[in-house]
Length: 229
Image (cartoon, rainbow, N blue to C red; front, side, top):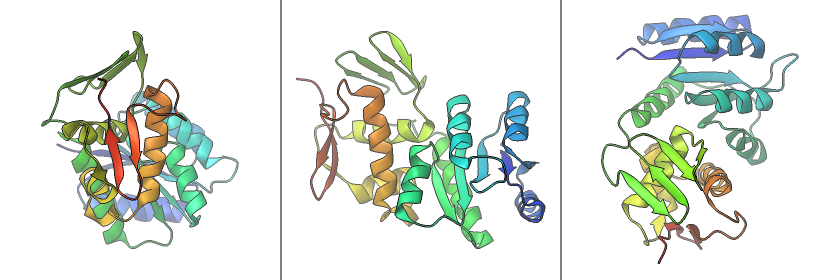
């Protein structure tokens, strides 16, 4: 299977380097110099992954990330010089699946890309095919979630986190185990990733996200999927 990647960066040199490196790694690569161009390209092409710079002239990278996430299931990897934990959480909250700080080494970026694409293809093949949480109905095979009959959009990573918890319901699952299963072992210490995705999942499936009844925090351990009585 040939994967299509879209590079979104207003720096022509970075676009050229990334296109050359990714093409050499046997990916089908397009590049956009800004948000409007990227959105237009995504209307006519289906991309598996987007590499997105946050610091582009005339564009808010986080807003663009939110728009991309609302219109596509492609993995989004942010590439940026912003390196604080607050910045990382903001990027993940905006819908990114991974966050790479500039300057980066190309082998590291290629490893992150391989991990993202590998975990999006066939990651839901084992474990439960459906799940019912009172009025929330989840079909993992069709990647469909409904709440009181209304469709709710989950990203591939959100599905993967929920599915991993559903494999071992009513049991505390350590942070490290979830991170390694969904993002890869190199992310097993990145707890901020998991916090951001759990927050988004609760907003989408919990009746009261601030008082969760399904996705529960296990202090100092991880999270537990609590099945209704």
